[in-house]
Image (spheres, rainbow, N blue to C red):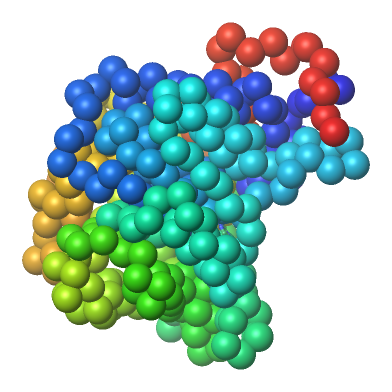
Length: 386
Ligand code: NAD
């Protein structure tokens, strides 16, 4: 079949296998163009490793640190003649490329929130790696079933306390609209914490500790975002921000649990990039379009792979803020960059969207997530789907 992008709102429901492979290859090429990373973990578990920041982390781990990796993700395989999800193709490509270079690269496709997948992953670690010295937690999910209660929680992207009105872009029609979002209920705040807070990260660490598969000096890191004022009502001060506060608290609890091993738990505050998760957040696609224009003009723009190369090459340290968080978002949060964002934000409209922002770059990044619009891929060629 010929696979074309089928975009439904903030998601593309098709993905191109060769394009996804090319997308992975491009990130590997970037890492190979940089220096090898010597002083980092060499046996790493990555939870949420098939797209976005988790995929880039795994690429840096495998090709920058020459580490053996186990990746956990939840992706749809090819079925009934329909293409798989992009993350499925990404993970397959990564396993292939890593193994070609003699690195161990094992994948577990299933619900990382479940104890069943934790058990399977731990058994695989024990069999293939013995002990691991790195755990990256990069899940972004709309729902989670709590393995203890069996209850399923759904996360929401809403403000807290009062309604939010602000600008956003309809990426289909290229129109700038005012959106209004009612504040979350207490139940929604709690549900978002259950999904995107640190409960599951802690549960992973507990089970890895109990199984005695964590090595001395193990390092674990989870990702967060803060961003500028224009996104605060919907992000930092909203339901997702509250969940991230919980994630930060969990880092402290986990650090304590790893004390006997001399281990460390860190939060890395990453830059805003285009991923499947971030495309779903109101306001963020417009903010990214504006931000990318400014950062590209200044030569400071980064994507997932550049960010994760920086994180791993700092050995999960460097540039910490007062709360001890690693600030990879320093170039995004630069005062000059954010002043420009504010100026443009005030005047951006449907008419001047492409003049004042890098909407083109945003759309390009979005299509790349699903393996489309990549140079060197023949999109007119028939693809065999099982
Ligand atoms: P993403 O949507 O690209 O990746 C999510 C990953 O989680 C995928 O590998 C997916 O398969 C996996 N996943 C989802 N549900 C799962 C489940 N039940 N079981 C197993 N795997 C599951 O998201 P992303 O934007 O890379 O986000 C990763 C982390 O980075 C999140 O914590 C996010 O808040 C953080 N972050 C993102 C940005 C950004 O701009 N995108 C910025 C800063 C921090």
